[in-house]
Image (tube, rainbow, N blue to C red):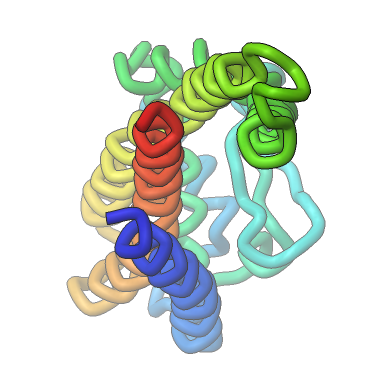
Length: 239
């Protein structure tokens, strides 16, 4: 069982790597062709935000490729170098996706509320869950009870703490999925509503956003398998 989980984790990591490569290559492939409307990504995002009543959201630029994101703290939609100023359907799809996140926050979309509440907790626990696991492994593998009475129990409880902490990250990954899927749906719906883009261009944006969705699915799968592997270690340690 445990060997199977190790193999599954490794395969999931390869899937995650493939998903990252795939989304980058898909974006590069379709970002070279300007849309018929020649509208820039930031202009379309601005139009969609204004139509949704998000006039208070500003649009800025951030360094990198596909580092686009929406910052709810400052109400800023940040478009990457590969998206900002780009008039391709691929870039416009990405910009509209991030605009979808801004609209989610304005509408108080429930999964976004849950995800936002988990962000500070996840940022904290992501730094310490591995410490619990390492300490647990030291006591379980290298400190016999004959040397330190109760060492195995001590390691067991540390392992439980590590699993509890890591499970927060898994929940965060799972809650992220509906947020991302919904933002993509909003993006494609908004692109159609503008009247600027034909079905082919909307289809291109859908391909790019579907490729991006694979990265979130892969991350959630990796997190779930890691959690199952840790649970398997706990069960083995109590035998």
